[in-house]
Length: 236
Image (cartoon, helix red, strand yellow):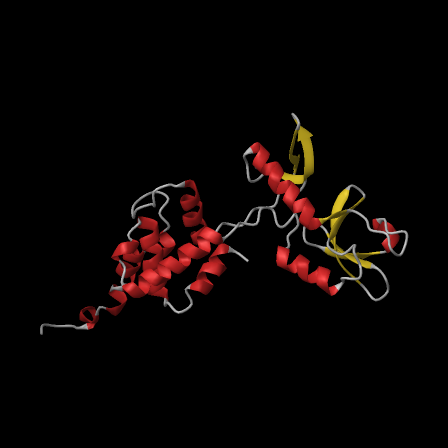
């Protein structure tokens, strides 16, 4: 779930213009000037942003959320291979379930799901457990990124597991074979990033001020549409 969706859920009782005002106040550091009702909304948005942890390249490198993996593990709790990452043909796959015919459902890093026979992912016996648990893989990748002081690989590269460098575990960044255009981050992500970096909020007119929720511009744009004087002809 994206940060925008989480903040929107926290501000459900506010209408569009009220959410604009809250966003504007957070961007310009003028929360104290809001009414009590809107200030409560700003505080709710801040609480969400401060507790939100962005998903970096999915969970453990796969386009799936932690909660979804936990749910799958509970659904197939008798099979310890569900929720584990296996390798086949040089590619990593996440085991997300098992079909009635015994085949495993696996997900690639592109999000595509396929069914594979147990032997194809290394399961040769009924009780055998293969690969590495996705939770452990995710934690190792988080630590590896901390070791290098970066949250993601550089542009055009993606993390494929980890490796050791100068005695430290670091992300194994490999060049992307198929370049996929990344989706634009939401407006609330900008505020979250600035709060995390300790930067001052942008002001209206600044280059990085988001025009999408520019309250003043919005007012100027809608005013002519509701100006009844413009529809009157002749002198009053």
